[in-house]
Image (cartoon, rainbow, N blue to C red; front, top):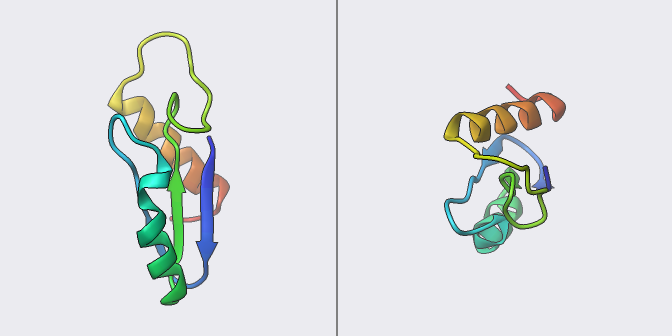
Length: 76
């Protein structure tokens, strides 16, 4: 999963909707990271720089992907 991780401090997670990607959050990421927040914005599978996975993708899969990313980054 491709993602941006900027700033420091408490964490904000920005998740895009269909048909966008993480770049839609660029202005908010710049603002909040400059204001003392850690900001994470992933590209969901099949969007932006994240790989396309064959077959149907469900909202449950998107949620599991996000949980896996947060685990990898050691965030609760």
